[in-house]
Length: 454
Image (cartoon, rainbow, N blue to C red):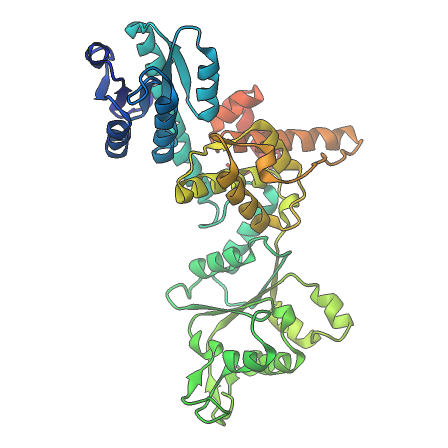
């Protein structure tokens, strides 16, 4: 059926008529056919065999004259295996139920009386689509694992960030990640650790904004037994625990001034003293910091030490907001839909076109974290297999104004179209080229022209 090496195709026929069961069992060449006569048997076979295609008669017991049991079976199958292609068999001219079935997630419908030959063609096409979608998902997963493990990105802005992280990782310079909340700074820090020479030692993280000031010093530097009420045993701090590895100070801009001085001394001398102790303890640790605050403005207001700023900022990684990352929002949204549909056992497969457009043009003030939360809620609220724009609750979304310079407009439009096509095609270059109406060699040439990673 094509040049790809396809696995053995499986088909489940859900039909309560014994005569039709027997006729259909032998009508599909090249398929392993299983038969079920009611909903419980159908669900059991779907869970065990994971068929690529299901043909489903809507008239099933205990409601063989109606459609309620058929629709319940349709929804139950998609709940177990959302990617299954279901071809619903309906009565002649029963288009209303056919349309309703498509709305609930059926792949196609077929009218009675059943012609096994024609139904076989429909089943073959559905199986081919199921196979190609599975290939695309696996290709997309490999794509989204790059350029850094755990990070999903195709935008030139984020690819540049990833290249910076890769270059900084083997060094031991103090690194400062700057960016709005929710942009993925912690994911980048973890990638930096995985690529560093310290990958086999601990990455110890502490959020400077989440711990009360009176407890933060003991968390960072530790304390000796009896140093204060409740100090019943000597306890090393986060800096000491991270020795040999990496210390991540998240929201370092919220570090109190008194502790800034103590942290500066550690960075200069690489020794610490626990609270209540007199012994200097040498610590070998790489310090990485992150903040959403403007440290230069804080320095001007005497809220952050300038000498500390230069100590933690031997190298800077500026993480762009999601609204400045062309193509990433749709790619992330698709990944979140797949994840949450599986976690929440919901038969949701993707987005309606208006929802995709809204995701592209919404400014995402909460960045990736906001996108993740909205997609999770939308997966729960969606009535069918596709998330609608209302499920995202983004309100009215306006497209941003375009510049007037024709060269800038043309280059921006081509870059945006290529990134959109890659997102829509889940990273499949051939499919993206088809969407764009160009050949694969032309698309690769455009990749080079606009410095788009492949």
